[in-house]
Figure 1 (cartoon, rainbow, N blue to C red):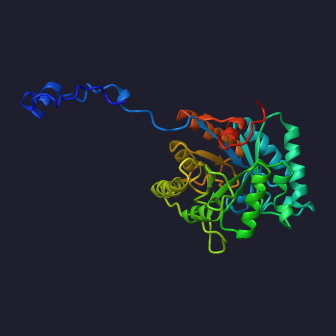
Figure 2: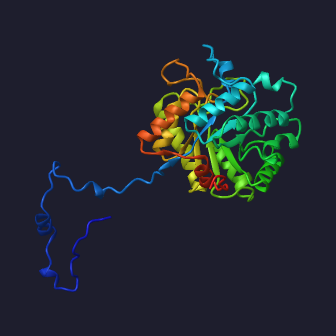
Figure 3: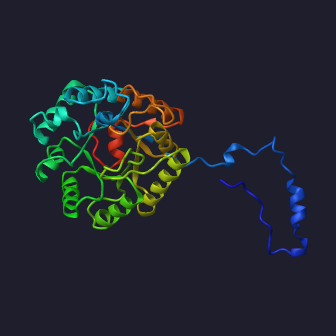
Length: 335
């Protein structure tokens, strides 16, 4: 709050009022070694709670030239072990996606059967609560696409807003009908505009909306979706801020999660924490421990432990699954 002061009485004869110079002399000079109280600086608008979620798939490891630790999930058992590991480390949610995992995609099980096998197995193996986030891109038909939602396995689902409009329209309607939450998966500022034009302005998702920023992912000339080029820390910070600004222009109170992706990895997660945003870490999006070294992370658990420690060092508290649900407008389960 501004300091109190005695205003000049403009109803008095003005020749009796002090001049600027007189008031300056009365105020006196303040030396730098005698600063005002720190309370003159108001607290920043940074939320205490941070939702730390994970994407545990090990598919990115298939492209890592240096090889990858066996702890990167590449089969059902790996997914189950990693999910329990990150929950024990402090994550409140787990993203499940079988894309690019031959041991699961070629297992003979359909997409619904694969989800029906894995998520109940994770739940049976731990007492820890979890908000499951499932991919809706897989399957032979629309029913298989949305199975994780309609079967009650997923509470949240991500969707990049540049797929065929009839399909996006239908997915958004099913997500809302089932009481789940849609996250817009954003790889560029253009996708912020698409989410607004095709989904939000059509009233297909509630506002404030949920956003998942996935920039800095690796790509080459054969990649069907180009990612954002993050060549150095300044590029990372400016690109992240640009996407956040575009989101907040259309959705000022939106819930924003930033993925620790590509080379930027933990640096991106730290930047998100500094901005008061939420984070998703995991081996689906990166293999590197640091952006300036070729050191590989050992596991998803390690990534969660590191971001939990960073969050606490910055004065932020990892959210429980129910606190996460409250933040994104889902009903709590363990009240």
